[in-house]
Image (cartoon, rainbow, N blue to C red; front, side, top):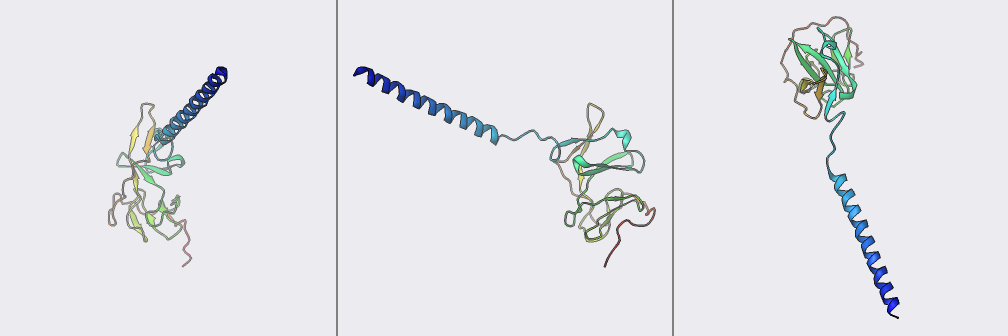
Length: 168
């Protein structure tokens, strides 16, 4: 009869030990899930292009950052592609050399200054830096408000007809 009691004690301790291991594994997994991830891609620093790719009055789209890069007075500027009015994607129009919002007609110059439309400010901006690998990095986790209305960073007249056709 003493063998049965020892067996019961052994099984009881084995079950309790197994339960402790399962709880420990659950706690470990939960702890790992609650830790913030190192952000790669949008929401963190996004690797873009070499600085030479943004030359002159060119605008370079960086889809991974949801941003545009351009140079204003030899300074690299990264602008969000979201309209500050209602968040529509604002494409670059090659024919007019303007950013034109297809949703409500806001127009921005190459520096992201608001020229016309209902947007409350110019295109928002992201900080940039040149990495050790010689590429531009756009910090999409640090959005800065765009320039207020009336700001004219550059005086670039339109180079042609607009891309957006107004249907009003």
